[in-house]
Image 1: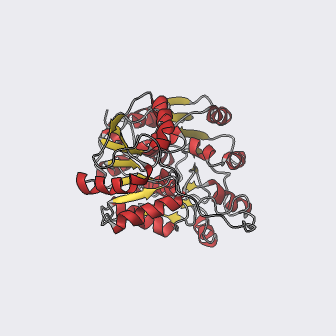
Image 2: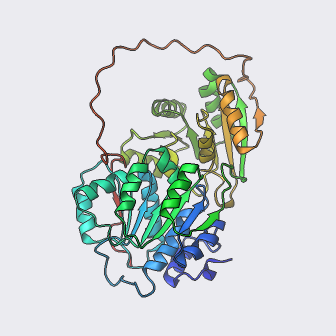
Image 3: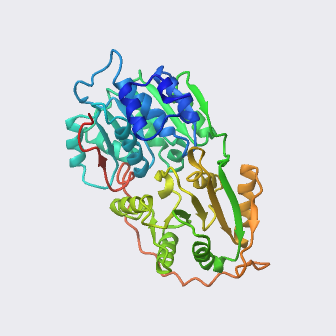
Amino acid sequence: MLFSELGLKAEIQRAVAEQGYDTPTPIQQQAIPAVLAGHDLMATAQTGTGKTAGFTLPILHRLSSGPNDRLTRVARTPRVLVLTPTRELAIQVEESVRTYGKHLPINSLAVFGGVGINPQIANLRRGVDILVATPGRLLDHVQQKTVDLSGIEIFVLDEADRMLDMGFIRDIRKIIALLPKARQNLLFSATFSPEIRELAGGLLHQPVSVDVAPRNTAAETVKQRVIETNREQKKDLLEHLFQTRGLHQVLVFARTKHGADALARRLDKAGIKSAAIHGDKSQGARTRALSDFKDGKLVALVATDIAARGIDIDALPYVINYELPNVAEDYVHRIGRTGRAGMEGEAISLVCHEERPNLKDIEKLIKRTFEREVVEGFEPSAVAAPRPPQPPRGPRKPQPAGPKSGQNRGGPQQHRSGSRHR
């Protein structure tokens, strides 16, 4: 099947062709006709399957076609709401709207928290057709009566599983209660837990189900293997792999923000150009690091699980798990950053003695036994070495109360298309 066979408007097909695409991915083949027909959608799709274009393309078509076509002017109230868990994903989705809607007079806006709200208010007052938002910042606007959701025709809940993981379920329910009853609903999730199915049951009406990523399976195009070593040898081993195997554009996963910073500094000092990306970094720093990584200016990007959620690179060749995740399902999300859209990728996990139970959990989840490897000079010992003593902790200082509901949960910046796209 070709994009030209899906019935999309000529302006959209032209934008798709300009990006070098002619054949839709499996989820696009299934989702686009369903959305065009006005059906609700429940889609199981991992990152890298083309799901974002799977809903942006038919949404652009629907907004610019048929009896409800109001694109002779920008809509004063948003017609489409896309809810995402992170600022990076919000930026990614809004960029997709701009890319594929470049030949249509459609205005898009992505908002997320952490900066002054006044510039966002001004942009909303100018009018927006497609609003992409994180839950916290959207509720800030609702509270201040600076956004009107009464005209929403299509509601997209993207990465619903991560939404629930991050504790957004109450916010999601508040937002849904503000939307018109008559609307089209699209729900995307990498996995469908009982909680997600309960949410879908109250949101979707006779949905079309699309499943292109069987639950908790890892990408078949990713070569996965394990290098066994000792905990205290991991940093040296990681440097050795970069220096001897010609690795480039590698996404490295660490468990903690502090660990990601320390590892990036260590690699950079060894001449391996690196940067860290996590929730404590400013949005400007995160955007620069990601841009440099995509452009090949960085050899390695060290990330935590949450920060990596919005990283979307079509041809990422390597993922290295410097530390295994505590939750086995997060391994699937991590390696889903490579091997996208049918391309091959490689995922390497550095596993020490203490992480072997985590490794067994992952192998049980994905029903696969990993290829093991030992690198000469970095062989693991039979038992785990004792952990180095931790410095004594002083008395804890009282902490100020955390942010109230809706404050600074979507991240520290907004992103907007600069002008109408014609």
